[in-house]
Image 1: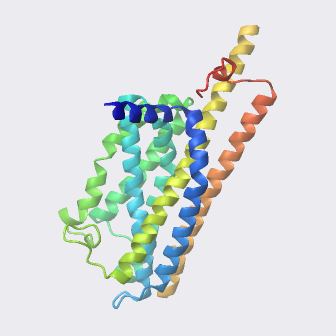
Image 2: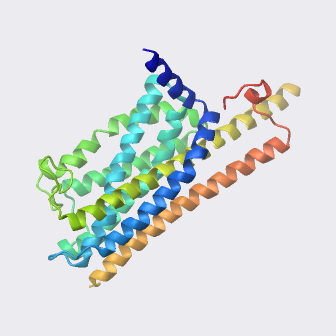
Image 3: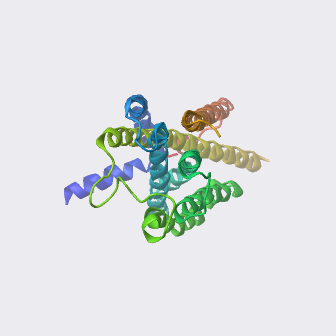
Length: 253
Length: 57
């Protein structure tokens, strides 16, 4: 019981933006260093991995395409959890977390589409097909852009929080659709070969570089997300101070 | 038709450009926000919570 109270207290204390700025400021250097190191190791392993007997060297695109696609979905899942935080607990940082994850998620989704296209052209003979996997990821990209537009449309950042949270949760239905699209429909895109109930079907010489790159991408995401959250807190602080200054002038007139 | 090497190079180059651009955008945004805060504080504008002795944003 006391443990619960202590952990709730710790979690609630994070809701204080000043405490969050202090804590994230301490974590960021370590997170950024781990991201850079894992990226360097992952890149080395990616280019040291053997070429595929069928795909040749184009298999190296997998090491940046697959983590980008995973992160595109993970970022949206982070936004969905943050949206629950906005709607249920009204956590002050939940909307900040959801909003600042948007451009990062959009960038990873864009990269998964672009590198997939650059991989598809030599392997499939086409840049693009409207199969279920590619189309559902394209819809995810449009959802990121739509949510970014919603935030831009509101003058006051706080006003977009609840409608954006509702939209994010409605859009979360797309995440399982993306994941299972290759099983539910007949797609040109191959079925899952890593996250399978019967274990990965990729040879360890290619699986390990892929997993290290996935860790690197995840660390890059959290580093960028923490940095963007800190910026957003400062942006809201500036807005509040400007409003306060304007009210002081108005009150004095 | 491009060589396979060109497709691999373009994929890695596009990833590097996109992620570097994202990082640069976030760094520049942070710098601009800190400058705005410093300007407001130089003008004597204080956060309400700070002037009241609180610690919230």
